[in-house]
Image 1 (cartoon, rainbow over the protein chains, first blue to last red):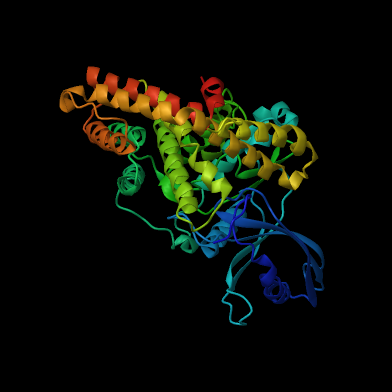
Image 2 (spheres, rainbow over the protein chains, first blue to last red; image 1 turned 90 degrees about the vertical axis):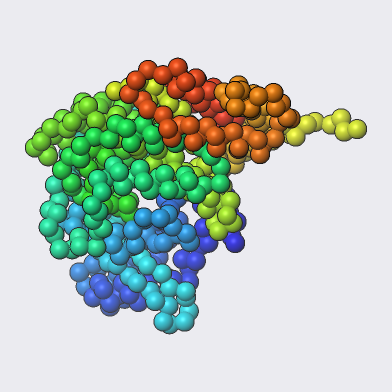
Amino acid sequence: MVAGVGNGKPVKMDEQIEDLEVFIKQAAGARQVKIVRRELMSGGAIQENWLVDIQVSGGKYDGLLEAVIRKDAPSNLEYSRSRQQEFELLKIAFATGVTVPEPLWFFENNGAGGKTEGGSFVIMRRVKGVAAGFRLVKDETVQTKSRDLTRSLGRELAKIHSIDLENPALAFLEGSDESPAALAIGRYQAYLDSYHTPRPVLYWAIVWLKEFQPETAEIVLCHNDFRTGNYMVENGSVTGVLDWEFTNWGDRHCDIGWFCAPCWRFGAVGREAGGIGSREDFYQGYEQEFGKPIDRSIIRYWEIMATLRWAVIALQQGERHTSGNEISLELALTAHIVPELEMDILRLTGEVP
Amino acid sequence: MHDGPTSKDLLETAHAVLRNDILPDVSSGNKHNVLMIANAMAIAARQIELRCDADKSELLSLRHLFSEALGDDQTPTSSREIAGLNKLLTAEIMSLSFGQPSKRRDEIFTHLVENITRELNISNPKYLKSSS
């Protein structure tokens, strides 16, 4: 057990550096590779993100390569993708024209050298900007360019939803005969049934969501974590959509509800599209790119689903801490946001649609 | 008898020192950590001050909600009883329907809103003001 105040995760990156340098040297076709700077980035409650500067001599990447290395955290949430799958998704998104960091290499260190326990690493080119939601919603440039930024975020999501479903590289994604809503409700209820303490408000949401389940819109590739805090912004423009670890098939309105849910506005409650801008600007940017309208009547449904989902994840994060698997103040505090989400659920379900 | 500053007072005073005296000099890389520590201390102070009354209020509200089923049983507050009544409540919620007006559903809704308001007064009282 490793204690810490930040993210509480065991920091074992140091012992991986040598293996990473050997791998990158080979992958980059370089004469020499040296990691000259590395810093654990804040955020990333589930995965670790390291800011690294790599001095590359020779080959295509000759010079200073500014990168981010994403590695597994000691414990994962259920349904979170492997680093290799995340790398594949990033490659497809990059090739499709979604604004994402350029994926460079995937490195599976099997620890064969005996020096490390191994691990999985995604190495991507670093993009400039800020992701932290609480900073973005207060940023003056973001507020000045709110309309354009909000529309461009709608377009980014629509580009993701336009990714070809038949792409063979996506074969690892799990299909289901159940509707996305029914599948999600079943998972959340199963978790709540197994949870040690009754959470009546979350069951209230379960019943509401079962009763008002909409027809499934067309199935698309859903990012499943597209929200403020998971994209980078520089000078009021999107520079990279991040965190593809929950991506899967789903109803496109699910991503829209997740983005607009009250819990992802970081206190800017009046700017209903992620605390950044107006809901209508976001919708219009999306519709222009996707070419089909958003069914506005069911977005509240998916916002309630989003709030329930975040509440379940927050309970799971708290359990990662209280179980002793990963002592972390950040995880412990996440469990304390559940009452906020429960109040959101009560407000959102206060009127019958 | 202990007559020194209470646990709540100690936590609140330490919290103020952390935020007002230490935080301004902390490196940007550690600001997030210090803010998390301050937040944890503030929650702990409110737990000490409000948890006992919040549990009593929740129990009274649950007993009122299930007064017919409980009869005259008025045993003292216990977290086990709260958990037991919340299981009853959860089972009843699972049988609810939202399609038609229902007095019972309204009673349950009122109980839930009041209870979550008490929980927010402990975990994040600012949320009640900012999002209302």
